Image 1 (cartoon, protein in one colour):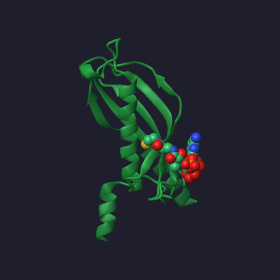
Image 2 (cartoon, protein in one colour):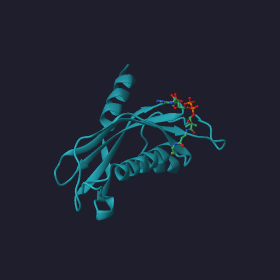
Image 3 (cartoon, helix red, strand yellow):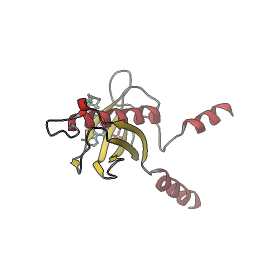
Image 4 (cartoon, helix red, strand yellow):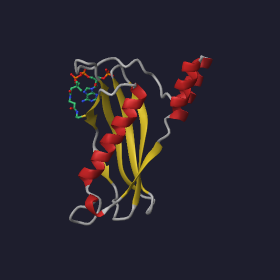
Length: 148
Ligand SMILES: CC(C)(COP(=O)(O)OP(=O)(O)OC[C@H]1O[C@@H](n2cnc3c(N)ncnc32)[C@H](O)[C@@H]1OP(=O)(O)O)[C@@H](O)C(=O)NCCC(=O)NCCS
C-alpha cells in the first residue's frame, strides 16, 4: 500500500509539463493573416512528440498514431517566441500517450492544447512492439543505473 501511494505521488509529480523547446517566429512561419501558420506549428509538435517518445522508449522506430482534437486558442506573430511543452499521460503496452501545450512567451497566452498524442513503438518489422516502459526515465538515472 505504501509503495502504491509512493508510486501514485511520483506519477502526479512527474507528469508536470516540461517546456523543453522554444521557437522564434520568423516571416517564413506566417500564414496570409500574418500569424503563425497552423501546419508549421503541428509539424513542430509532431517532431517534439517523436523526440520525447524516442528518448523515453529508447527506440528510433516510433510513429505518431493518433492526435485528439486540436484547439487553437491564440496565435503568434513575427518575432514572438513560443515554447512547446510535452508531458506523458500513459505508458501503454506498445504505445505512449502524451499531451501538449504551446505557449506564447510574449503574450503569455496558450496557443494550442492537445490532450492526447498516441505514439506507437515499432519493431524492425514495422509492427507494434511492447516497449516495456512504465514511467518517465531520466538520462541521469539511466547513467547511474549503468554505472552500478
Ligand atoms: C502504428 C501502426 C503500426 C499501428 O498499427 P495498429 O494495427 O493500429 O496497432 P494496434 O492496434 O496493435 O495498436 C497499437 C497501439 O496503439 C493504440 N492505438 C491504436 N489506435 C489507436 C487510436 N485510434 N486511439 C488511441 N490509441 C490507439 C493501441 O491501443 C495500442 O496501444 P497499446 O499496445 O499500448 O495498448 C499502424 O497504424 C501504422 O503504421 N500507422 C501509420 C503511422 C504513421 O505513418 N504515422 C505518421 C508518420 S510518424
